[in-house]
Length: 453
Ligand code: TAP
Image 1: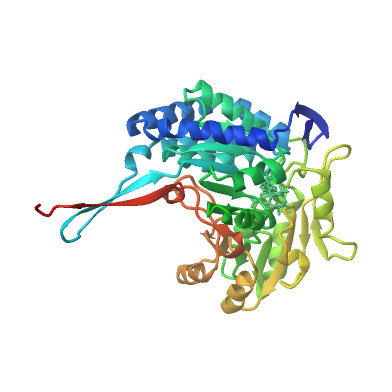
Image 2: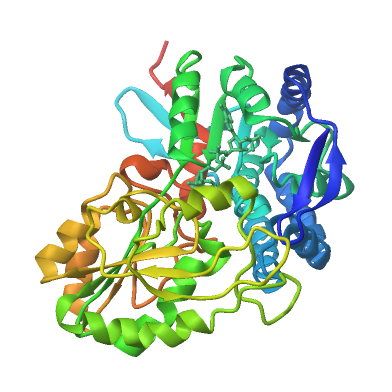
């Protein structure tokens, strides 16, 4: 039996029979059978069905948010925000079936047109940090483009995925179009990766498993999109609004207990304001409230598991330069305090590896060139921020940062209508916005001769 825990209390909240490889094969077979019918649903009807699903998700937002908080330990306010985004993502892609435009290309001797064809069955493998949100970024464009899907949630957090399957059915999505299998990644996930009947795998999770997925997909030349780790830099220049940058920096790395691939887990601060910045950041770290996910005032919940807590702790040894530290509740739950390590060098382990916990490395830099060099000195390239009042500098630095997304005077990374994804070892492909549809369709070219006889 798969025991699903509440990481804030360590209590078992659900027991599920884990799926086997045979169950994964059966789900793929159902999706394969449903594909031709779903592909051929008139675009306006597919749009209508997706709108109905978006409305149903809206109607169940509070239930889903409570379920997500119970399973992940994230603050209820965060879960509400996430469920709003889930419904919004479906509303956005419901507008797409009728906008999957092709082209006509001038050629001699005939007419040439392109079509955006769905891929077939897509396998979606998602992690535990934003369970339904990340799944929705994959499911909504996949369905809008006419694919059918098999979703494999993380074993630690399957509850909202199971609820989603029911909501989709009740909203009128035809049987076999949406299939959820809850089982171990190494078996069920791997089966999706290797199955000749799965046309594409979209994965979010660790770089290590992402690599294994890319290798496994090679056997059938499967399309793969990967959203992997990050070690994003929050770059603060001396000419920034320091108070704003410092007061917002903690939420940018301690939000979701740091279990966020976009976490600004390196703060690069211009040397001349380094100490001022730390002093300004201190009250914001110390007042970051860690505690009961269902208390509306809570900013941060526990880590996802005991094992993960051990991993995070290993980045803060006895002799670590802890400059600021928050507090945690007593008793059961996988708690870890917000922790600021400063000053650190970009060479230190805590500055190089993705910790995926509430630990941030604060690192000094000398000038613009040094800031760019250190920000880019990582295997990752997902997100980041630049804080400066100099608009020309903001654009200069933004263009040279090796990341898929970057914000100026803001720590946001994702919006439903804009592309999200990584450079370097942070991944392959883009999610959200119209760009996601490129990764759930193939371009087909049709040439028709107009020559006589
Ligand atoms: P992963 O091991 O990468 O798990 C992510 C998903 O992949 C889960 O659904 C997992 O299933 C599945 N999976 C595992 N092995 C697989 C395989 N061989 N073939 C196919 N699917 C497989 O992540 P994790 O253990 O949850 O977290 C480990 C580290 O990954 C974290 O510390 C963090 O650094 C990183 N991480 C990154 C992100 C993002 S958003 N980039 C999200 C979560 C974690 P099971 O749950 O059944 O194992």
